[in-house]
Image 1 (cartoon, rainbow, N blue to C red):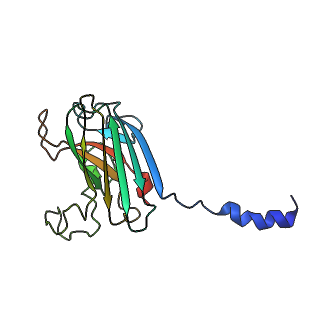
Image 2 (tube, one colour):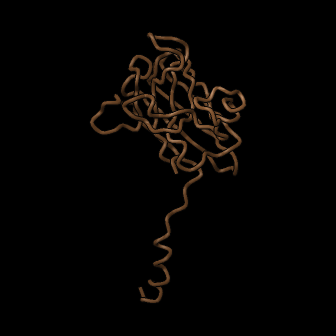
Image 3 (spheres, one colour):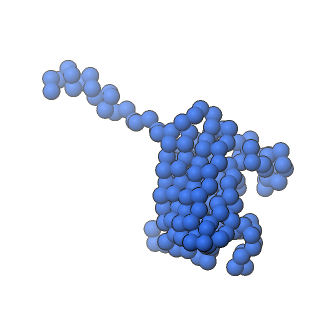
Length: 180
């Protein structure tokens, strides 16, 4: 390649590719104490068994909107899991996932004010599993997460089962694609 042409193409090669408006995260749930930090953590093996699988497709191709689809297999059968976008990452401590992500942040935390803690201001969905523990749920919100502030998708226990409180965090999936 002639030197002038190579010099002209070098700036193009150094450009970072634009982030795709559609991201896919696929992960198997592992124990929070795994030697290598897992992409998906189970805090309740009875509801989110180790080895169960999650696939999250996030579509931000429409400006000012976010659509998210969660598909899971191998979870507790015939169960309803409330699922929320959270501000923290997945760690050994379920609380490390932080509070629910809010488009307009409630100045009082933990957020219980219905003006902030609602389905328009938080990304929420309910994953209902069938008799084999498989399920899928989709939601769309009229905003896009701020870069670096939406780091995980958390499955909550839902209806009391196996000694868990409804709000207990039973699973967490790391979302690097929304993390800025």
